[in-house]
Image (cartoon, rainbow, N blue to C red; front, side):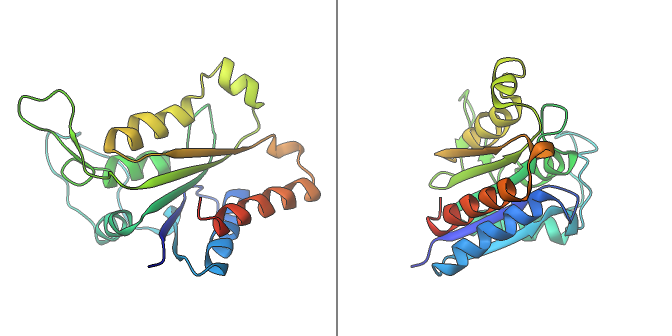
Length: 193
C-alpha cells in the first residue's frame, strides 16, 4: 500500500519559493509512486477567521470538509510556509483554527487534563523559508514558528515525529542555491519524509 502524503502550501503568493518547493516535494513523491496530494491554501474557499472562538459553531464550508478528509486520509503531512514576523502567515493560522478542530483532531475527555489525540499514527515535516539566520531565529525568537506548529498544534493532536527543514536566507539566495534547496526537497519527497 502506497504511503499517503498531503502537502500543504501555506504561502498566499502562488509564485513564491514555497510554491516551488511544494511542487518539487510532490514531484519527488510522485516519482516513487506515493499517493501525494498538494493543496495550495490560497485556492481554498473558507473563512479563516474563527469568529466566535469555540463558544459558538460556524458554518462549515465544503473546502473545510475537503481539507479535513485529506488530513484524515494522510499518513504524512508536509507544511510548506515562510516565516513572517517570527511566525507563519495568517493563512496557515486560519487553516489551523478552522481545520484542526475539536472532535476532529483532538477530543477533550471528562475528568482528564489532556485530550484524546485523534491524529495519532501520522507524521509530519515542516519546510520553512525565511530571511532570519537560523541561529538568530533559535536564540532570539526561540523557534516560535516551529514550536507553535510542532508542539502546540501537531504534538497536541498526536502527530509525531515532526521533522523540520529550514531554508535561509532567501533574499540572498542565488539561482544555484535555490536549485540545491529544490533538489533537497525533491529527495525528501522521494524518501517520503
